[in-house]
Image (spheres, rainbow, N blue to C red):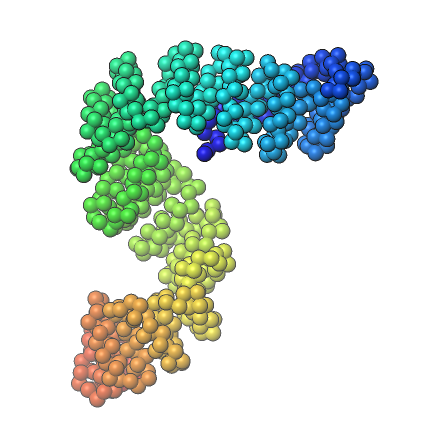
Length: 588
C-alpha cells in the first residue's frame, strides 16, 4: 500500500512541519503555558509558582535548541517539561514533531494522542496526528482524525478529500463517495471531484456510472475537449474502443485543431490495426504546439525498435520534420530531426539540422558529437575540427569528442596533434571499452606513421587487450608487422582472425595474402589475393602489384608482368614497379 496515496499533494504545505506551522505553534505555546500554571499534575499536587517558572524556562530553552537544530538536547528539555507538567500539550506537540523529524512516527503518535486529548479543538495537533498515522500506515485510525478536523474546520475541502482517500485505501468506496458529495456542497462541481469520483466508480466496476457523470459534464460544457478525452479514455481502457472512437470523432468535430484528441484517435486506430489513419492522426497531433514536445519525442523514439524497416524510418522522419514546424524555437526538435535524417542516410540535411539545434541551444553535448560524426562521415575534416574544438571549449572532459577530433587530425596527416587529443580520450574514459580500443588502435596508427614502431606496437597491444576482436586493429597491426618483416607468425594469426571476424573484406584478405607471401607460402598467398581482388570494388593498384609479385614467385612471369602493368594503369607510379615491368622480375 502506498503510504502517500491517501493524502492530497498539498497537505505538507498546508499542515506539515514547515516554517508556518512552527511560527503558529509558538502562539499555542504561550497560551498553553499561561493556562497550565493553574492546572494540576497527574499526581494531583497543585503546581507552584516555582514549577510554572521552571516549565516556562525549560520550554523556551527547548525551542532555542530546536531552532539551532540541536534536536537531541531539545528533546531532552521538552521531556523535562512533560515530566514536570504532564498536561503541557505544546511540549507534547513539539516533542512529537522532533520524533517525526527523526522518522520515529510510532513514538510520535502517543504524544500527539495525549495532546489532542488535552486540547481537542486544536487543528494543528489533529493534522500532525493524521500525518503520523499516515506515515506509519495506520490508516484505520484516520477516519476519526478527519472527523475531528472537519468538526473544527467544516468548510475546508481538503479534509474531506483526505478522508475520502483514506476510505479508498480501506476499500470503503461508498463512504468515499459520500465524502466527495460533502466536498461538492462546499465547492460546487469541479474537475478534481469529477476525476476523484471516476477512480472510485472504476474500482467498483461501475463503468456506466463513470461514463454518465462525464457525459453530463459534456452536456454542460460541450466545448471542453478534456471531458471527451476523459470519457474516451474510460471506454478505451475498459475494452470499449468503438465507443471511445465515437466520442473522439465527436470531439474532433467540436475542435479539429486539438492535438490531444488527434493523439488519442491515433492510439485507437493503431490498436485497430488501421496504420494509415493512425499515422494521419499522429501528423495532426504533431502539428499542434500545445502537445508537449517531450511526449512527441517519445513517440518518435518508439519507432526505433522497428528500424531498419524503411516505412518505420520514413514515418519517424516525417513526424520529426513536422516537429520542427510546431516547435521552431526548441533545440530538441532539430536534434531529433537530425537523428532521423541520419537514419535515412541524409547526411547533408542532418548536418544542417544539428547546426540549427546548436544555434538554439549549444549546451547539449550529444548534438555536438553527432555533428562532428556526420562531418567525419562526409570527409569534411575542416568542419569536424572547427566544430569539434568548439565542442571541446564547452565540454573539455568529454572523451569521445577528444577522440573524434583526434581522428580528424589523423586523417589530415597531422599525427602529432592527433596524438594529443587521442591520449586525452584514453585518460578521460577508462570504462568505455569500445572507445579505449578505438583510441589505442588510432594511437598505434599515428605512432606507425611517425616511425615510432615501439610505441605503435605497445598501443596496438593495449587496444587488443581491451578488445581482442577488434578486426581493424588486428588487420593494421598485422600489416605493419609484415611490412617490417617482423613477428610474421603473430601477424599471420592476427590477420587470419580479422578475416574470420569480418569475412569478404578485400583489404583484410590482401593483408593476409601479403603475410603469407612474406612467409614464402606462395600458393596460399595466391588463393587469398584472388579473394581480395574478387571483393575489391576500387581496382586497387597495390593489390594488383602484390598479385604480380605472388605470381612471379610461383614461376608465372608473363601473368606477373601483366598484373604489374595493371597496377601501373590504376595509378601506381613507383620506380620499383617500373623496374619490375621493364626487367620482368620481382624486386623487393
